[in-house]
Image (tube, rainbow, N blue to C red):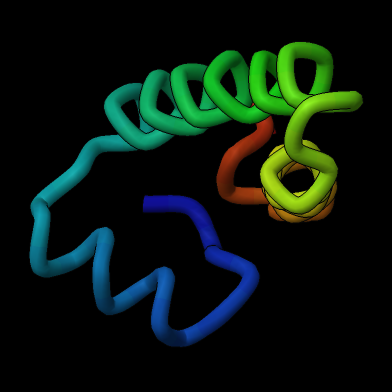
Length: 69
């Protein structure tokens, strides 16, 4: 298991029993969902669009979510 960016993330991964590949797939799924929030809600619901942006930022900053890290 790769190092996570926070102790809470490490505990979650341990309790779920997620392999590196499963964690990376989950991060990719979360990224796709988040980027969809950004473009779809940019005008109609800026708060939700911002949630998508912040989620993308967290995923990009988390070394445990990066494929091949």
